[in-house]
Amino acid sequence: MSRAKVVSLANQKGGVGKTTTTINLGAALALLGRKVLVVDSDPQGNTSSGLGVDAANLEHHLYHCYMQQVEATQVVRPIADLPNLALLPTQMDLVGVEVELMDAKKRERYLANLLEPVLGDYDYVFIDCPPSLGLLTLNALAASDSVLIPMQCEYFALEGLSHLVRTVRLVKNAYNQKLFVEGLVLTMFDRRNRLTYQVQKEVFSHFQDRLFDTVIPRNVRLSEAPSHGQSVLLYDKTAAGAVSYMALGKEFLKRQEKKRH
Ligand SMILES: Nc1ncnc2c1ncn2[C@@H]1O[C@H](COP(=O)(O)OP(=O)(O)O)[C@@H](O)[C@H]1O
Ligand SMILES: [Mg+2]
Image (cartoon, rainbow, N blue to C red; front, side, top):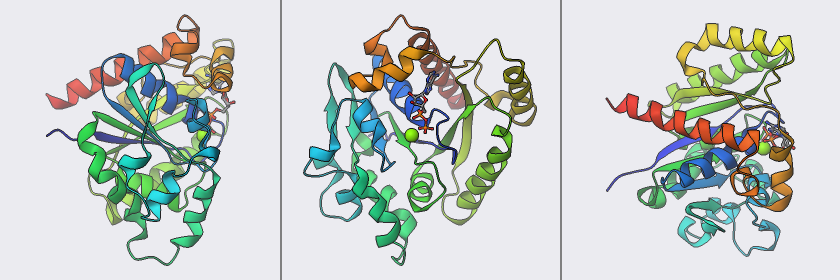
């Protein structure tokens, strides 16, 4: 039986496009025929609502899996009109994990353990992380094969980046030998702004081909789609944002093929 590759979407900065990338890269790969599970690991629950799931009204969500009250299989839900996409939803109770597991033994392994039984059902699992490097992100990194870093092209972007890369290295050394930085994706790319190109050049100088060629432009459809509970790929597949996330999906898969050879 094959086993899903698990990828965390992480960046301790808020508003850089983690959630938007989780939803739309997940949807793109689902449309490209891969079986994808999206795990909403941010208590804000924006990935859940952005995929049309109101987790506030659910009996069970990721928090209950963390607390070992239910199995992940009982909580995972299908996504309307995307038969290859599934969601492990979340709502704000998930913040409790940070406190309740503070003194637990192997507290960084909870997410890896709860996901284990469902990995055989998918090709890819994408974990949307909260904008911090706390216990939830630690669990995501410990459960992952790799990290995908969405980055907004702005002046201070690189500062936070070195902190994140250090954290990935620490987690790798302490908990998860296989972890690596899969790649970086530039989001909210503004072709009219010179700073955008400076940041792109600088990120490339540090990360070379780990920087994805595909950039995600600033596109209003991407910010509208979540209020309709849909990925942009269903909401308006002709929008620049949809086209670019589809291109990102194809580039992502091409890179996976290359790694296999
Ligand atoms: N490429 C984009 N163009 C326009 N708006 C975007 C784009 N990417 C994200 N947004 C919007 O910016 C805000 C922050 O994005 P989000 O994905 O939630 O970031 P994060 O998860 O890192 O906090 C959201 O309102 C989202 O709709
Ligand atoms: Mg988010």
